[in-house]
Image (cartoon, rainbow, N blue to C red; front, side, top):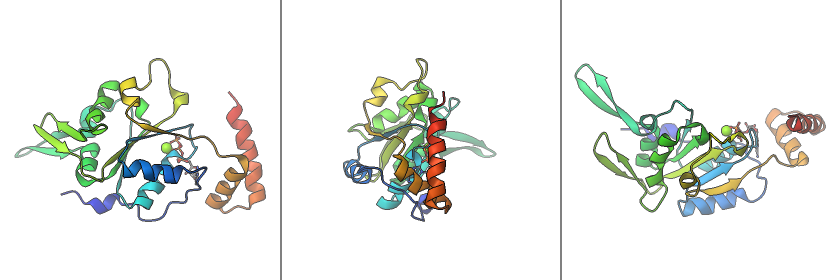
Amino acid sequence: MTNKDQYKVEQEPFYQQQKNEVALYEAAYRNRLPVMVKGPTGCGKSRFVEYMAWKLGKPLITVACNEDMTASDLVGRYLLEANGTRWLDGPLTTAARIGAICYLDEIVEARQDTTVVIHPLTDHRRTLPLDKKGELIHAHPDFQLVISYNPGYQTLMKDLKQSTKQRFTAFDFDYPDAALEAQIVAKETGMDEAVAAKLVKIGGVARSLK
Ligand SMILES: Nc1ncnc2c1ncn2[C@@H]1O[C@H](COP(=O)(O)OP(=O)(O)OP(=O)(O)O)[C@@H](O)[C@H]1O
Ligand SMILES: [Mg+2]
């Protein structure tokens, strides 16, 4: 059996809200809508998801997607052992079974034949077929799928299929305004706000360098 507690977010992560994204996410979660968090690197996507998992008191399973990832890495596989084979659930399957929030980070990195395995989990079916095992999982009522997506990285070759994108409620993130960002930097680092404000100014200029 999977120990659900290991995926709990124990400590409240520091998250400074930018607009009303916390209430919006709560509404999305209430309806178990799959969520896509969009935005440039470092704008707070992962922190937000971690914070929401903590706030909702749900386990969080994060998968860092990459181009070598196969559907089996998400869903699971048979392992060869001395006495035969043993099925091992992948992180997506575990999340669907235990009712976790499954966060697929940088989903665009994964190949399209891998991303399609999430489709039946993201519509009214809320199921995950384990073809190799001959099992159909009905997702736990608490299960929710969240993906992150950095539109800046997309190229003609690498983008999500329309059929994947349209399944998600999008949360559009961007860098906070300078005053809010200075507060975040000060809180995260413990430095005083005047120094943080200078750093934020430098950061803003650096980001606009191409
Ligand atoms: N709104 C926020 N509240 C608190 N901390 C924040 C916030 N936004 C950003 N941060 C800080 O910035 C860091 C980077 O944020 P995070 O890892 O969430 O970015 P990201 O959008 O997931 O980036 P990437 O696309 O590179 O994964 C966090 O570790 C945190 O210190
Ligand atoms: Mg991230």
